[in-house]
Length: 73
Image (tube, rainbow, N blue to C red):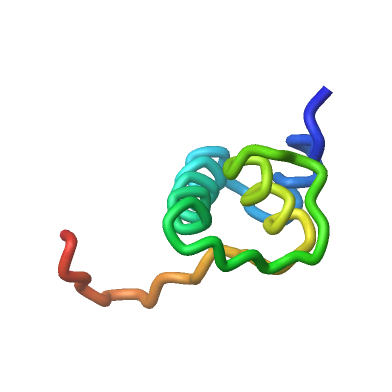
């Protein structure tokens, strides 16, 4: 059983693709910086910690501005 569950995560971020992308970027950031947002984590792995932060509301998806052009496009 996953903790946090996919159902609770999908209430925070509505796209599985976005959820995976955000969790992977945050996990990489945790591994490099070690800047943790929560006091206590259940998971020992960085991806699990990132998912716990999403469930807790500490990490969310930034809305994209309509018509904006970003440098990575």
